[in-house]
Length: 233
Image (cartoon, rainbow, N blue to C red; front, side):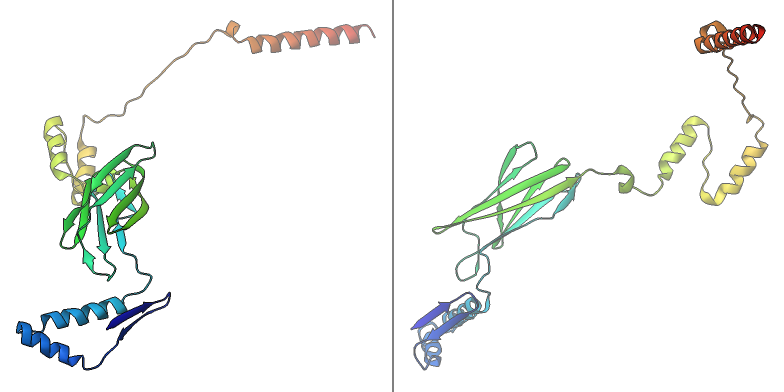
């Protein structure tokens, strides 16, 4: 009595009969409520309202993680009526740039799936998720990257406790920004602070400077040639 038609643009449903309200009354007569009738109508509406091109298998994760982040995947599987199901097992394979492979199984959670694979080293990773439901096999592939952690960005504020510890252990002094004038006065009045001059003397023998010897030889040779030339004129 109920027929569905499906093309690339939309879906159509046809009930080949009349007096469907009688079904609701008869459901109440048999069961004392209208749960079965309401469920039937709701599923018909749900099936017809979803897009015809909707996928039946989804896998999602972030595109980029940091090395100190937990890498989390989520997945959804729909039956042909586009209802969420969690009957089949979902398998995940992660491959790094060297070709090493890691295999995981998703965990079922309230009609959906979730998987935490932990922390990864920096690099580019490919993943392939597979699920088999009924006589159909579905697969989804993707890529995510893991970036190295910049420790300076993780803690941008000053560690006052550490600075105080260094102060006590080294006999130094610690100043905050509001005490900058105290730092200036302490430097000017501290008699132990003196300028230090370093002197470094290097001696090089002229005989080791071959280029200087060649220049002197050329000058002497030029002088001798000039004297001989002009003396003969």
